[in-house]
Length: 106
Image (cartoon, rainbow, N blue to C red):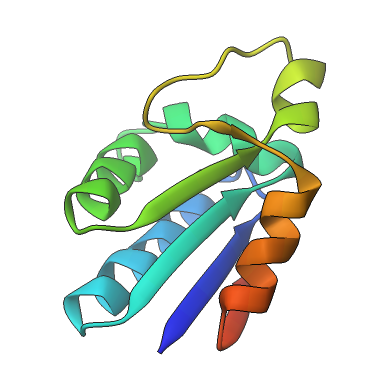
């Protein structure tokens, strides 16, 4: 299946579980895309000790997952683009939803 994950939280445990779901899905042979939106764009840097979201994102990328992030949300937080998380548009989010068999939100 094709899973689209919409991650809108910067809560360490919620973000970690969202990306962990993506990693587990990849390991079961599914295709996965994660779109970071709202506070979720901040999750790429989270390492709270107990919930190392940044390391989970690395595992997601190493497993072949695709990561996208809302450009408007990044710019409103004065964050820059990084190669692990390219700036994307609302049209990219729509494309992910249309591509997906299932969309999961965290």
